[in-house]
Image (cartoon, rainbow, N blue to C red; front, side, top):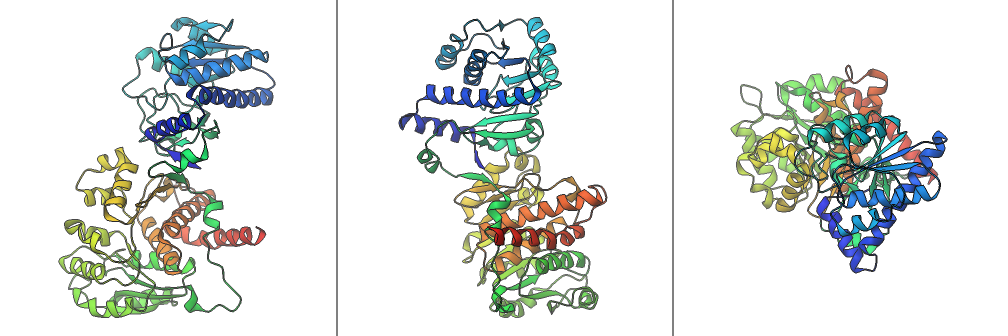
Length: 509
């Protein structure tokens, strides 16, 4: 599913107009698609009255077209003008074609119409909305939200760029988005106001989409199924990657355990696990598969930079390196992480304390000569950018995309609607739930991602696959354990079933 910002959508419309599909035709197509969708809903319910709530911009124009087409087919429709007569030339032109369709302009009339409508269509504010709602608008939206409300392009009151909402935003059962889904609609909290999202083709030429700067798309199961490495009958372990994990400390051995277990479940052929000597016996009893590399530690159990020579030798034999999960943030670990990055010879996945260790010398990232993937949560991203978490969350795509472009990395900004940002474009994940909001979930994701990269999957593909399956595992765990009681380790237990489905799907295709 394509995703666009409001600015990109305006550019698409401009390019479409330049390529022979005029703004008027786009509006007519949008209205046609909306009318077709509404007819389908009416037939399912075997009839019904439709009230179109319209603003004074082009979003209202789309509704005027749909109302005219539905009325011509005998559907009882009415139009409520919440912002007065349309102000754009196109919308006014469509408004003048309403004929004898009832047009309501008073608050009392519109309230009464909402009360008897079977469907309320929200075409008040579009992707350019900013500011706040007037009290009477918020009151009408609350009434409409109690009906079967259908959003036109985006629920009124939502920010199509960031996913923010203002108090009183329309809450829709379904939203029909034109041309492409708007990025803000797959971010929270706006996502919860959209209901089911349907994307309608309005005739924008494919060539226009190809000219968009920084393309974005949603991650789907069909997409990631193609990334899974094939395993031939005569394969051997050396063909499925050699992963070096530099993780854990005496205080945080669990992070090393979870990331390693997740990596193993994602199919890596060989794993070398560098952890403090004191935790190896306990870890080996639980997971005997890796080769363990004992690291020297300080008196508090954190790795020393003196481990660097050993780790560089092991990295030379590896196809990917994971560093950071539970490593701790000390002057010694900072020196160790810096050296690994400076002398890396294979792709590096930098997670958790690996990220924290470079926040004071962020420019070192630009000097890394191998593919680098960072997996920050919002607080870690704020440390990287030297800003607040609120600033990160206020415009997640801008923050992630700008960082990826500036530093030449793949960046996985975790959270609801995880973003995989690269210098060329971005992908957004839709799987996962609040039950994953527990310490350790990030370690599981880091191990999954590192395993896939080690197997030779390109970093962007590996990141998309890891975040999708990570969220899907969380959804599966929640189904039978509940979001309240599920644990990060439960996600690892769901991975075999998910990979089995992917393999079966690939074989059936």
